[in-house]
Image (tube, rainbow, N blue to C red):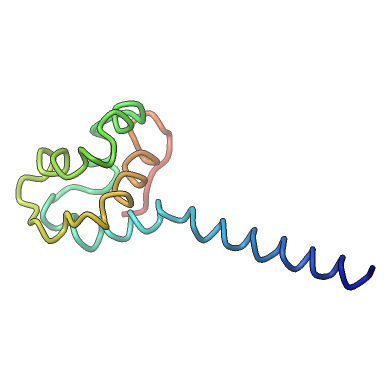
Length: 106
């Protein structure tokens, strides 16, 4: 019985750590913004994310992120807008939208 409890607790710990790692997209989006977009945009991440509210970012969605980033930052190259980055940008912009009350450090 004691072994079963230890195994269950161990599995619970592993699952909780895994979900924390999977939900870290906002941090990755911030890092990507700083690395790939900030210089071309010439504005901070807070200013870029603050262009819309959380609901507006939700309406734009991941599918519209590349076009919206091009509107905000016309000088951004296509390399910075790869499909694999868009979900992270979306999470970052939505987290730090104008109505969120959150301020990124970039």
